[in-house]
Length: 202
Image (cartoon, rainbow, N blue to C red):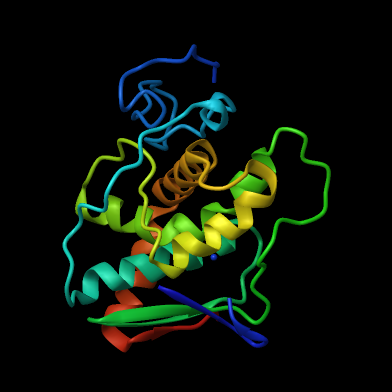
C-alpha cells in the first residue's frame, strides 16, 4: 500500500501478563462483547515481542489488495479523518489523503498510548489482510522494506526508539480491534474497490 499526499508521498478488566502467544490478541470470551478482539492493554507497550514474518499469500490478488486498502480507509475514518480515497488493482493499490500525518501530534502522551494508537493507521492494511484470510495474529509483523512499516516506524520511533516491538504490537492490535469491530464497513469498501477499482467518500 502506498499513501499519497498533496505535498508528496506520505499511514476490561486488566489481565496480568501472560506468555501464551495469543495472550494479548485473544478473542474475547466476555459474552457481552461484540468485537472479537479486545483493545490492547498498556502492558503490551512494555513487552519485548518476537517479530513475526508475513505469512499471507503474495502475488497479484485483487481481493487481498482491496481489503488492505479498505483497512487503511476504515482506520482513518475511525480516527475521524474521513476524506481518504483509495484505488486497488490485483498488483497493488494506494490510499490517498490530502494531508496525511507523518508524525505524532504534539499533545501530552506520557504513556505513549496515543502515539501507538495513531500508528495503527499504517498497520491497518496488513491487519485487514489477516482478518480477510482468517490468519491468527501471534506477534507484531515485521516488514521493514514496505512503505507502511517504514511510516509506522517513523511515527513511533521519536517516542519509543527504533524498532520497538511493543509499540508496533500495540498499533497492530488497535488496528485489529477497530477493523474487527467495523468489518462490515471494511468489506463494503473492499467490494467497491473490487467492482470499480476505486473508492471515494460520499
